[in-house]
Image 1 (cartoon, rainbow, N blue to C red):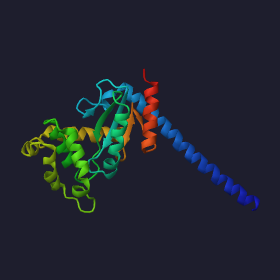
Image 2 (cartoon, rainbow, N blue to C red):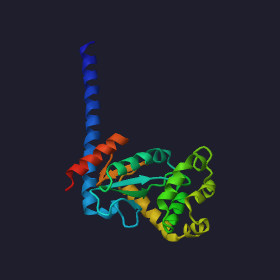
Image 3 (cartoon, rainbow, N blue to C red):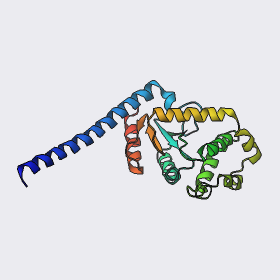
Image 4 (cartoon, rainbow, N blue to C red):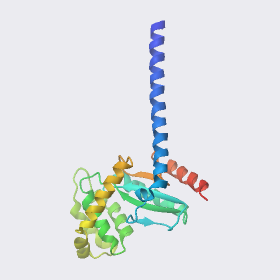
Length: 217
C-alpha cells in the first residue's frame, strides 16, 4: 500500500470515528436535556390523565410510548410486566400514546373508553392478545376487536358511546405533540425517570431501571 492510500484510509477511519463520536455526544446531550426537562416539566412525562400502574409515589417512573397496533409493543409487553413484578412497589408504569399505525386512534379511543368501566388493563391485554387478527399490517380488520372485547367483561354499547367523547381526541392530539417534543420516533419508546432508553431491549431497560433505583433516595 503506497503512502497516498495510507493517507486516504487514515482519513476515512478518522472521519468514521468522528461520526460515531458525534452520535454518542448527541445522545448524551439529548439525555441530559430530557432529564432536565423531566425535573422541570414533570407533567410532560407523567400527565395527570395518563393510565398508570403501580405505586402512587414510586422510585422509578417507567414511561412507555406505545401504539396498540404496534407488533413490537405487543411482543415486549410481557417483559414490561416482568420488570414491574420484579420491582413491585418501586416502579410505576405510565402509558403514553404514539399512534403511528392506521387504526391506532380507533383502538386508543376504545382503550380510553374502557377506563370509564375500570377495565383499561384488561382491554389493553385483550387487544395485544388478538392483535395479529385485527391489526395485521397486510390485512387489518379493526372491527374484529368487537368480537374479542366481551372476554374482558366490558359493556360494549357503552364503549361505543364513550369512545366518541371529543375529549379523547384532544388527549390524543396532546399525546402526539408530546411525543414529537420528546423525540419519540417509534414504538415502544421508554423513558426511565426522564432518561430515554437508547438501546432497545429487555436487558438495557432492566439495567437503566436498576441504575435509577440505586440512585433514588
